[in-house]
Length: 589
Image (cartoon, rainbow, N blue to C red; front, side):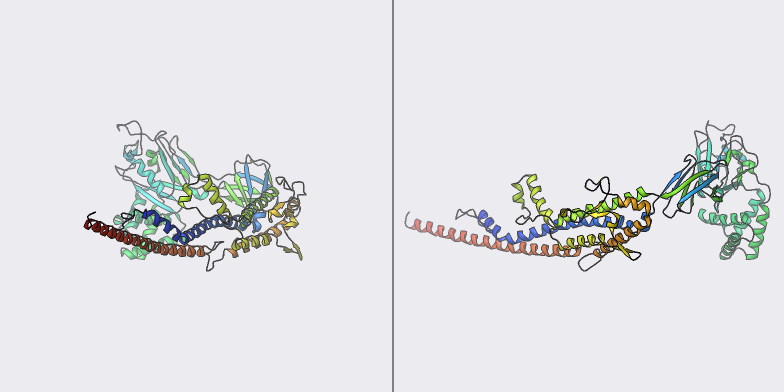
């Protein structure tokens, strides 16, 4: 930009003159900016409307087109203190008799109180206390504790530095819930699930078994060089060999995996592994050292049951299944809740030989409320679309410039812009198409046994008030002030012929779902799952931005031109004034 001479010679307010000249030249750019602002506001309107339409489509419409939405069941139980029952849509209506013989339990062990050995400092055991410092703890030093649960097996080699916390952590490693409560000085050990398959095993490995297992470990791999995870994998296979029935699939698979590992490491042949497996199984028959677990407040646990002498204060609950007799059939399950043919039966207590009865029937109120909720939400979005489509014109209203806003209050600005925003989708063809498609689907008919029926057959009608533009009403709905006095045909049909209601509702909402899906189809102007032409909006905004940039450049050139002209004028006037001064000086003035 060259040097600008602004009124030095002429005395003119060049800045103001150029500014006024530029305002006139900027009118076309301003109009483009207004169009872009309106486009952005329109896009915001569509985004908000699209969110609501898509929510209606994915929630209410998608659900109401499915038969399951109309098969809601209710259950009446004679004694809810011992059992709770709920029914899914596929549950059979009718009366049921139930006896509860047992309720599933989890395998749990509460140890006796742990005690420090004589001469050990401190008054309480903590997780950091060494097992060797416990009463009779020296009996476990040099021993190995085997822990098995749900097919997983780990072991803990106890040395002088092994702590109570180490033992708890190994229990957790196989999925057992375990903790040491310092306030109670006891360990609480529980399986992660209930039922017969929740039982775990914790015992001290005998010297013979330990030796045979060590032979098998080192025949498979260089055991000492393995990671903890790798050791656990081998020990789990060896545990399977010990506890699985010989010849079973689990047994054979475990032996094959051990052989594969031995072959890969080159440490043993298949025949040697077979011999070592047999020797190991024989060694496990020797009496274990279960009494040595007394240092940890317990005895051995084998398949959920205590073995040997139980320390005073130790408590054991074996994992058991639930057992019920439903309509004469004895059924078992591993949880306190049993799922049977669409029924969810929550067991709370035993019936002790007596019988509890319950009945399953269609829940008319729930289905009625579901249909009503759908109609309400449909009406709400239809009402919003109608207001946008039939809005009053805002002809003559344009977005405000910054200067115009400065002269107005915030309330005036909000009212001005609100009038424009409310009219942006007035008579919009895309919006009109969506409205007609949705109304058309809701007014469509469904053929049943050769006859055609519609929502009106269920007492779901449009109003005689044309200003509602097709909103629906459920005749007899007590919350509908206009039609509450009409006969509630929908409720009566739900009670007498629910299948008829289901066929009409699923047929109509299925068509609505289809029409809305078509409106969301991907096109060259719109993305998938979008009701409006979002791609077209982006292109238009880009075009406006380009036009505004071009006008900025052009207006800058025009402004520079004006200043050049005024500068030339100022220079000419300065020269003329200089010449006049010289002439006056020569004439002696």
